[in-house]
Image 1 (cartoon, rainbow, N blue to C red):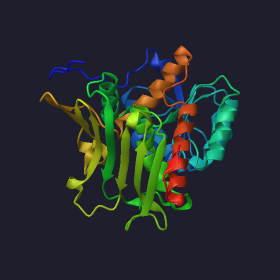
Image 2: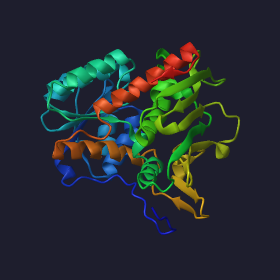
Image 3: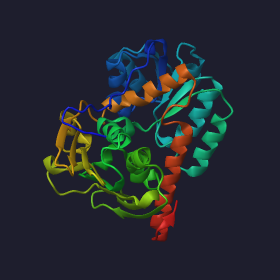
Image 4: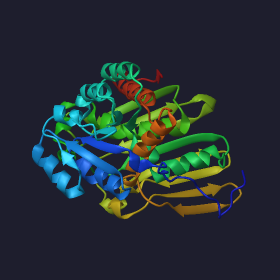
Length: 357
């Protein structure tokens, strides 16, 4: 493919036609719903019909703040409401299996937070249950809908870089884990709730690896007795090599934090910045930089960032799948493959060796 400075990148999440025919009910009124789901849904003029949380105070607060039609006082009352088509399940993953089953039995289409489950056994049970119903379900692996990741997918599909030789995904920052005290109860919480985004995006861009070697290390300001620094090396078919380096205990000031990727091909290099993870990233946009061997160098600022613009992607994908009767992009089966990759990373770390995937 010929690349010049005027080239166009397709990276925006397209709103389906007649999107406003679908009404949404939300389970969960925590931080991720208040700061990401609801602001984006409201910006996109989606109809939020109902909300339920075990804390009625939180439910009432978000109902009023975002002008939701109503809130429910119990999960039974919530599912007795026939005025919404899609349920957005946004709670810790330990509750996903039970709530997913309830949504299926009440014939609601489903958007469910990642991870699909905290265990491979529970995730497998969700898949088995899903197969019994003619319902559409999408998992909120929203990082792959972010501008920097979708732009990379477009560029790889166009083959601008030629054969891909190697890549590295990285984040170097300081994270205040006290915001999520419930993570202390979970085995490998950073991997299951943060690095899983990067693993899913790697699968989206490059497919599944054939081998990997992982080291998961405690951070000095991390979660007590839980590894929060993640290092993984990958091997793929066609001699592709990759790596993932995630650190949460940077001593650098926030303006020097880094997050993004580097993808090297036979024809050149693509670098991307994931702005939400860089310092005060909420004030910046994602960007990419392409350097080709023929001396063409192009830097593009993309519109939007991972948090929170990308949260439109999974719900739009689900609506499109309902309309056109196909599986959404980050569907249950695909998300199960990402859960399996998480388990392979854990296995490699515990065995301290390369393993086949």
